[in-house]
Amino acid sequence: MLDDLLNVKAGDSGQKTWVGLAELMKAVECGSIASAAESMEITEDTFQENITILEESICTQILLPSEGELRLTDMGKRFVRRCSGVLEEVEDIVEETINRRWFTTRNPAGVLRMGVPHLLGERYIIPAVVEFMRQYPELDIELNFHSGKVDLAGRGYDIAIEVGIEIKENHISHTLASNRFHVCGSPSYFEKYGSPTTPDEIKEHKTLLFSQNGQVRPWYFNKDGKQINMRLTPKWYSNNADALLVAARYGVGLAYLPSYCVADDLNKGSLVSTLDDWSQQEEKIQLIHLYKQNSPAKITQFVEFISDRFKHFPEMEKTNIHLV
Image (cartoon, rainbow, N blue to C red; front, side):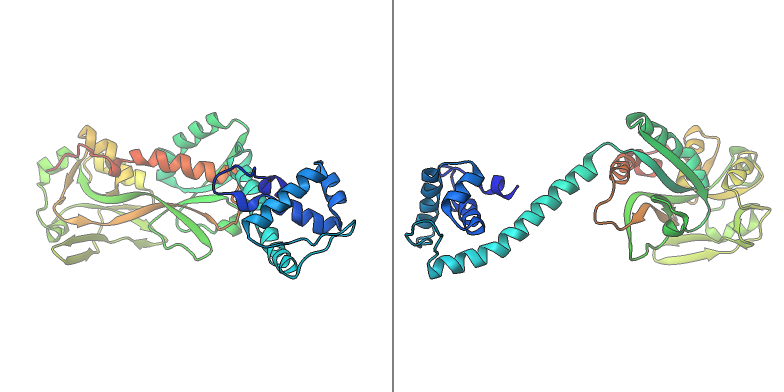
């Protein structure tokens, strides 16, 4: 491999110094020019010509005239000693680069194990994974749904999609999209109860809250540097965002839900957004995987694929959101 790397013709512009270097190192290895020329399958005359080109290019005599046994000048010995370490490192780099390219660009195969949040996974990840499998039919998928943080190593997952979490040091993260929350309700609800004009007025409304592990999540607002974290008494609470979404459609109350959950309803007009002049909670949607020096193709290709897919994520587009 190294011989091929260093086998540059003397006429190649800007690379003349390399000519003869492979021959010199092979001569040192074999102990004679005759043996080295035979090993490289070139004539002794060509071998010697390339050594001469090398000597001329570095303005230094490397070999002493001799019959049979190879003899180096003092500068030649120093030159060979310095080159030996450098060329070993170059060869390692070349081999690593070739192996890494093969490892990461070949078609994905095997099983891609991933963990995804329930609603985001059902709405966006499943259709994307189906399309990805069509491109790479040799790939199998294990899709696991979760709530909260995922222990990649403990679960044996290759990747996970996470929303609004801090990434551990030994993990690699890829931000896929920004996810904003919306306060929304049905047109019939707003017709009957009116629309809040400030976060404080939400207390006068029926609210649908998300709960997890017995804890009801607050609603977050920000405007002109003023931050409000609202803890409300719910009319309805659930640990399932779809349940809150359906209840909001039926006019039960106001829901505080992420973009990927309500984008279709907002565009269709079955839900209406309010308090949009207040900045509401935003979270990053991230793909994470464990750090590996050579990530397998099933991971690298899926990262590229899903990153492109999420360019069309609702919050990344100019959605036609209906405001009150």
